[in-house]
Length: 246
Ligand SMILES: Nc1nc2c(c(=O)[nH]1)N[C@H]1C(S)=C(S)[C@@H](COP(=O)(O)O)O[C@H]1N2
Ligand SMILES: [Mo]
Image (tube, rainbow, N blue to C red; front, side):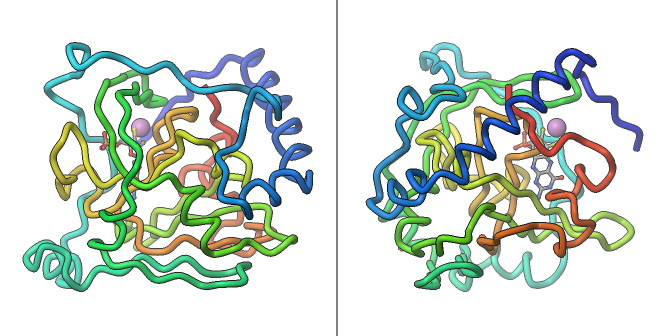
């Protein structure tokens, strides 16, 4: 499949600038200390950009498009769906002081976020939906990133026809943004398998491919160079920009 990036040259240069600022902020001990205290980052204080706009119930698109590799069809994922995800565990590990393992019920009990935001796919379509879940910052604070941590890598159940798994990554700064969530529900219903059930990332400040579906592992790391193709994501390994801020 050939995909086209809807980013102009000027836009790409601006994005590279944002990425530099983002990395500088990410290196700042402030980000670590705020995450350690389980406080959402104050983007007005820190710089880069603030919250994305939110919408009204009446703006919700009844039909939220699906855009991904095939919904996993292996027996492990099928069994999870059949048993209402009883055996599902989300592992948070890597460069952390306190590895975490969550069952779905535990994540549901931690749900505090619900907002109506717009999803923007790089291919040019958008959809407005109400996403609910656990702020990623909450989970990161529990895992306690080590001072060396710079990135958060998301590992997914799906693979392409060549067997390559989907994955994504954010820097710690973007990961701790108050609107970056491990989403459990769309439009007041538990996620459907096609939308990434039982747990998917939702990053409304970034283009759609950053919002990894079917996440089973959140790995904290000082670098993503040694992970899969080394560019921080499935599409990044085929040339997409790693920094996909909107
Ligand atoms: N695991 C996984 N996550 C993924 C993808 C994918 O192929 N696999 N596609 C991405 C892309 S390109 C988009 S636009 C959104 C689409 O999310 P939706 O299918 O829930 O609309 O998921 C993103 N997350
Ligand atoms: Mo997309």
